[in-house]
Image (cartoon, rainbow, N blue to C red; front, side):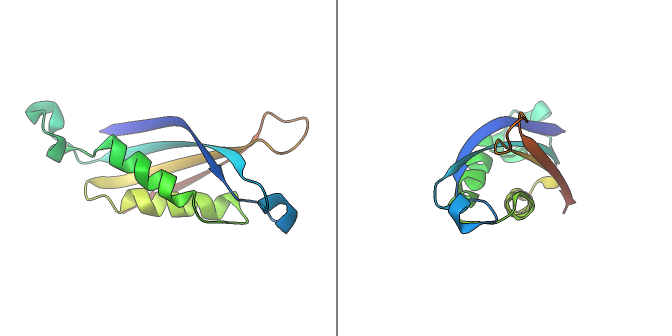
Length: 112
């Protein structure tokens, strides 16, 4: 089963130069989570992952300052993989910083 979190808006201190990290920047997070699941038969939350808990874990990652989107994506992937039923995760982050672009997006995949 795949669960998708689409375009979660976060604010965090990120950027290579210190001047860029002074103010929080808006980052959009999307995640594709492959998990073991039998909730479609049982209707029990214990048979899947709690989306609210996953989103809270992602939000907690935004409280730390980082230089790169790549490290931020890796930290989010690790936080999601910490959930028992997760087998694989793909995390995409989009940052709107460079003039003339709609954004810069990086994508990272990890398996448990």
